[in-house]
Amino acid sequence: MSAADFSDAERAAVYRAIRERRDMRHFSGGEVPAEQLSRLLEAAHQAPSVGLMQPWRFVRITQPGLRTAIHKLVEEERQRTAQALGERAEDFMRLKVEGILDCAELLVAALPEGREQHVFGRRTLPEMDLASVACAIQNLWLAARAEGLGLGWVSLFDPRALADLLGMPADAKPVAVLCLGPVEAFYAEPMLVEQGWTNPRPLSELLFTDQWEL
Image (cartoon, rainbow, N blue to C red; front, side):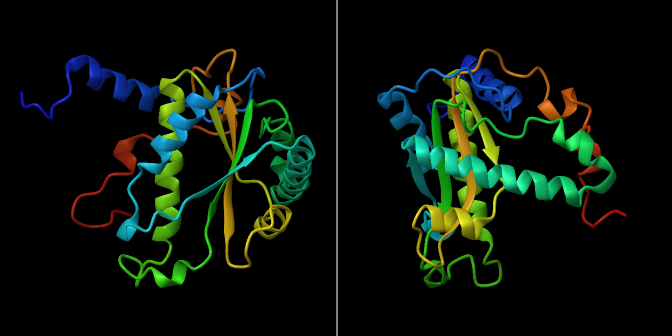
């Protein structure tokens, strides 16, 4: 065992956080102390990024009126999504898809303006800026779970409408509304599984060797 290795207990804690992370929709109010929120955001900021471009920007929402306006945007898109789902519309409308008005902290994760200047790692795959932001959100998610806090990623919104609401530059783009805070309990399984919406596929169906398998 080298000095760089984790102990058995440390490894188990990492895998537990990964295994028990949930996309939370049910929150119990409360608060996230400033020091704890700082730790979580620092964990997000330590994420890997292509070309070290660090394309994540976080907007902390503190004004109740702004939180309500974001909720309204999400509700509008929820209705549009239900219409697009056709025969599954009623099942979808029964799902709780966000906790914007209930969570202790509300954050918006976004891509910044001026991303075209970052060519390293993006010349053929420009979407790697989004992949980098996703890594930051995952760091935040796992850190929150380790701290006993729930986090939910909400993607039901018109990006331009949300960008305008937050006064973002024209080429900046919001990618996630993040609900963060205490929860009464974590779901035993992903909520969409518990609600009968879908079932996850096993890794064996998603892992190929050497060539794509049809």
